[in-house]
Length: 558
Ligand code: AHR
Image (cartoon, rainbow, N blue to C red; front, side, top):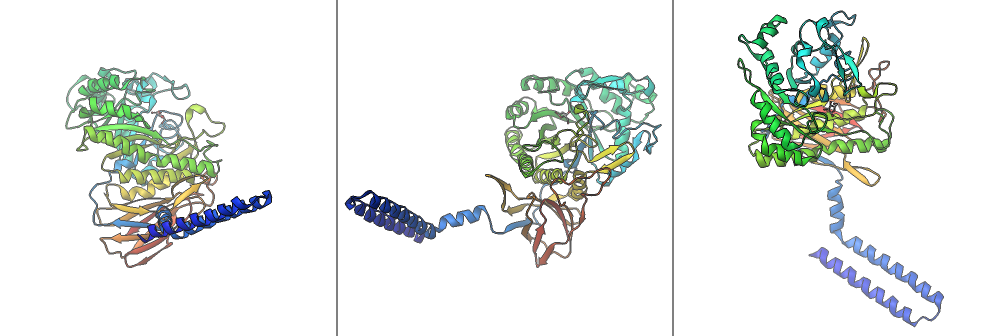
């Protein structure tokens, strides 16, 4: 009321002052005098605006609401209901560039230490970050892969041309047995993507029989001949990949029918229960989601959209970019939140009980290839910016774990936003690897509800929230908070209230760097790596943290 009155009084005063000036104007005959009075009018208007500005407190309040003076986080430590499926921290390995050949597979005769042809250093690193699930053999490659070419004595396997990725000829030495051996060495779940685009129903049906049938059958006997007596357990099974594009350029109605047809013949043998995953859309193709959920959703366990958040704005280089590129990249990374919300809303319409999981089986940053490398191999470097892309995306996925049950960053080794880069016998860990290793504490933990109020990170006329957070409570009762400060120049003070728990002890780790473009190389492999972090203060249950610029911070609370 008082505010409204003040505005009215100010407006009335302004009118009186203005009309007095106008009356005076009328009496003036000389031009120079008129000019002078016009100047007075401007002054009057400015005074009016100032008066209105001083008294119109609502406007001031509104600005404060939009840009809070302090960043504030409330964590409801006693209210976790949903579980963060560890498969949200899943990975993807395709026959593409040097992901399989050179990345995972070096062959039994290699001088690089290996176990049955699989690199030991890569396996050890992935086990350390507790890789939960690995998708294979593609990607676009999946829809031109014929599994029977990849079994039996290696020297007898036919070679094939990888037409999607660089047109290279590969010898099929890494096939079903090698992939399932890799998953056993990694202690992770296999996720196989079958060929719909150029394969047949029979081919896919026989693949499942070959892998999982325990009795006597042509496929199971063939597996035994090839050295594996016991069937494997394979739960996750994809029915094609990007069938709107490289997987056959299909219309959603056509693919929905094919999904139903292929899905019918994917059988459960020997106690193995397949979890069937249908091809989802790319980005904002909501029509695809609508049709698939309507026509085939009831036959699916999972539905798999893809989202790549691209690269910078001016430069697409992974390591040579400026703040404009930094901002553009992170803005696009955050867009995944809107995509998940909108695809989920369509899924909710057809599946209100959330029986069908969203499986984001390809995501990540996609930069220009490293200079001098094959364009078809998608080999890119990985900087602290990529760590922020990973940290923020994983926070968003955690916060949507009621629908999102698996996600697979593209790709594990030497391709796109990789965890690991190799060069002959050398191996380095990327900043993205470190985020996955830090965030492993969220695996299968209970998501904690949070309320975050934070300042914006503004660049030019655009802005995004500067902070991005998720929190969970693990089975031992320990609370984990992962925090990203997306601002590359300013640190951020965050006041965090922990409700529903008593804090005894806090520990922290942070991943940050001096430069926006900081990254690890074979000569300097530890430029970006996590360090102990203690820039926080606890008073009762109020924790005040200062997050360094461009950082991913993990706090553990007991
Ligand atoms: O991950 C690289 C490629 O991106 C995959 O093969 C394809 O599914 C997607 O377009």
